[in-house]
Length: 121
Image (cartoon, one colour):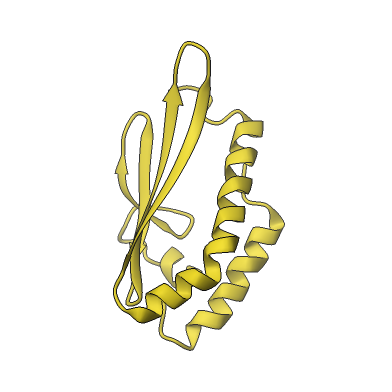
């Protein structure tokens, strides 16, 4: 499936901007082979219908839940993000990235749906 090309450009821009503040870049996160990862997201929990991803950093800690809800009529993906701010810099960071975060999540869910993910539960 993969991400849309523009998402990669945004991640590269984000990495360039935050590197000077001592925050983890996506390359640094991908390089952490000691933890289970999907791309640069650490996997905290895997269940039959849900996966919890996230990361802890100086400015904030976040978790992303991707949940498959299934009924007799439909199947849908639900993404939920929870953020804990470690200081004021975390709030400023989220204020800057939140609009892009929403676009990326919506794009990712649409791409997953078009690809038929998850194929089975």
